[in-house]
Every structure is written in C-alpha cells, then in structure tokens.
Length: 289
Image (cartoon, rainbow, N blue to C red; front, side):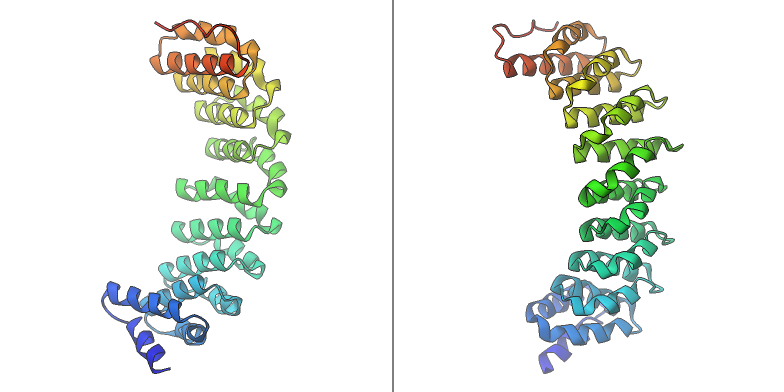
C-alpha cells in the first residue's frame, strides 16, 4: 500500500518523465492500483487526472468505466481526450452514448479520440455520429471517422452510401474511401455514380474504392475515366483497372501508354502487365515510350 501511495504522489510530479514512470509502475501493479487511480480522477491537478486516466485505460478494468465517462466532461481538454482514448481501450459498450456526445466536443483532438474509440467499441448505435464526423472541419477527425466506419462494418454501409450525396466534397470523398476499405459490393452503383462528381478528389476516391472492391461491372466506367481532365484521376483509373483485372481493359490501357503524364503512363503499363500476367497471356503489353 505504501508503494502505491508513493507512486500516486509521483503522478503529481512537475516532471513529465516522473509522471510517466509512476503511471507505468502503477499499471504493472495491476488490480490493486485501480481503486487509487479512480480516486485520483477528482484531483485538482489536471496532470494527475490525465495520468490516472491513461493508466486506467491501459489496465482495462471495466470497473473504471463509469468514472472515466465523467471525465469526458472535464474542464481540461487533454483530460477529456485521454478519457475518450481510455474508453476505447477498455471497449465497454456502456461508453457508446457518452462517446457519441463527445463527438461534438469543442476541441478537435477530443472529437478525434471519441470517434476513434467509437470505432474500437464498435456498437452499431454509433454509426450516425461516426458518419456525421465525416463532415468535421478537421481532416484528422474525418480520417478517424473513415477508420471507425470500417471497424463498425456492415451497419455503416447504407449511411455511407447516403453520405456520397452530401453537399460537402470532403464528406463524399471520405465516404467513398470508407466504402472502398470495407470492400462491400453494395456500394458499387453509388460509387460508379460518383465518377461523374464535379470534384476531382471525389472522383479519384470513388475510383480507388472501386479498385479495392474489384467488381468487374465498373470496368467500362473506369475505362472512360482514363480520359478525365485531371491527371490524378487518370492515374487512379489506370491503377483501379489493374486491380479489377478485366481483360477488356488491356486495349484502353495500351492507349494510355501515350498519356502526356508520365505517372499515368507508368500506372497504365503496370496495370496492363498485371492483367496479362493474371491471365497468363502469351505476350506482355508493349513497352511505353
């Protein structure tokens, strides 16, 4: 007990290294440290509260969840962020609703941590908040939402498809990315529709998603994207055609060997070569200039 008391005092050290060492030692002690760490969540020093929550998250004892949830409303944004992270590490579904509320936190790093933890907890109830986070003004929060949607899985597919029609191009782009990473063919028709999006970044994300999914029904539209006015879109189309692997793409890819962008030419050659090897054709595609 004396050792725990000494380590708890270490959490309040003015030196970051000392606080970290005390936190590590408390984690190594295991269950006996849980009660004192929970008590420390009411300490006046935010550094102590932060260190205690971090240790509780690593210990992973569900008994601490209720107290950590309260810390999501702490006046210190660093403490709130660490609380959100800890709840994700513990993974208790009881934290879902409080984490959903934290997605609206005024601090972007707290929002990011809350979204990441919602993905780790994986409760379908979080889908709405996660998809809404694709509209966040901070790219780190949006990328966290993409990963969280993928972790939640099937319940997020239809909301993501709906989000492909959002007014915000960042939301459309991230929705396409998430659907591609999920590799769910349900999203293919909506992704194909996004190939006509007015935003080049959205078109590129839709193409990349279709390449990941690998549905050959997208081949004709992907071939058409080899003539897009944006070189990044053409590059993505060539790569996606290689991923889909349809022999019908060989001819158009060969034409793309003469694209005025070297990156597109090389992507087209690699895609055509990949398809030829996949089908064991007698001849490799002609070399690009």
